[in-house]
Length: 124
Image (cartoon, rainbow, N blue to C red):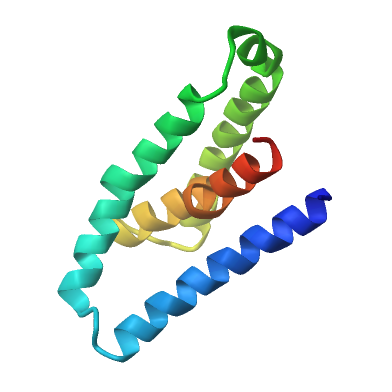
């Protein structure tokens, strides 16, 4: 399977999950309180467990050492995104929670919900 089809399949799965969520909210199956519970469950339990499981399964010391350059580039990228977020938040005159949320979105985007599943599918 080519990388393009793997990415396309993962995006399709993500869209299906999102549509299921929209339908559940629109039909009243999940209310505002339920959304808060799901949000906390995903960010505080499911996502860390997924990251931990993907890290533990199949990673060898050699693979880790071979990927140090990628880790270094990732650290540089996050530092640059941090600076960009601070700069843009200042330019847009954001403050308080808006500034913090904007800053977080600038740095991390959709890594947890789209990036990690994509990388896991591309490089099992």
